[in-house]
Length: 422
Image (cartoon, rainbow, N blue to C red; front, side, top):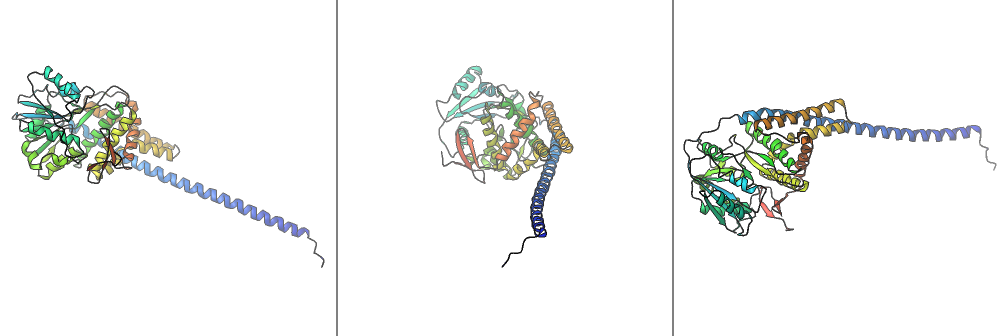
């Protein structure tokens, strides 16, 4: 049987078929690229909008905080009518930057009432005892007691130290203060005045950071002065904050007895916050006067800075989960920067970033003016804001903290347990 020869039309049909298939494949590739580009563009627009909105809310918060700074510090201080005896209780652990000067500030007080100083350590060879001996020589008339007691009641060694010192207290007013805190001469007057007010069970003090020598300590100061402090001021203004800070916790013996003593807080990470909540449960308030104390920031390396800030952020998360979640709105600059990146640098996103930078600098200026503190390295504030934002995000990734060289796990109730790898 003879094969029918292929005609010119057959070749044309084959060529047309191949061309159609090729064009279809090219069209499908083009459509797929267009679809991918459309989806990517949509997601970029969505991310830009979301980050811009978060930045806008953060800018509004920052401006509100800046407005509230003056209101907080312009409040009249309560003037004490009486000057009861006060016992200052100081837990110590090793040497610290300018430890003697910090402790000495509590001796140099414009307070006519009797003052006792009680220092506690767990180890008789603790180097901090050398500083206490120097203070004895520097203030020979001062009433000083030293307690060396190794007893522990839980993983929180600071609480154990405080409990061990209570048997040596001689006065009715108790003032607990961390060793890295320094104060001015009107400190005890401010505490006594607030503690006399009706319904007050505890007096605590907000604080600002003082940097030790070094670059990274400035990051800790920026976190303290321009994140923590405005957060406290704003939280108090809207009635959301329930603070109680270990830098100062003053109360009477009667209040301490009413809440059931200190040993119950031996498993708490944020024992200061738990102490404040206990005082509120018995119907008293926690007063926060406008009187600031100074907190030494001594983190000499980036690792030390990040570890310290991460522990602090996770402490807040353990003490107040809702408040910690709401703190996501306190970071306008990183959100504005993310919006700029998502939008590939549009003019509108650039404007949002400039507004965020301006708002943060305004807040910095208002705080520096209110606290009579000149800010060094103000141009580094955006970098510190990024570090602080990274710390905040990292606080959600784990429930472990490093404290005094030991690793602990923090449960949902804010309780400490020694990590299994210790």
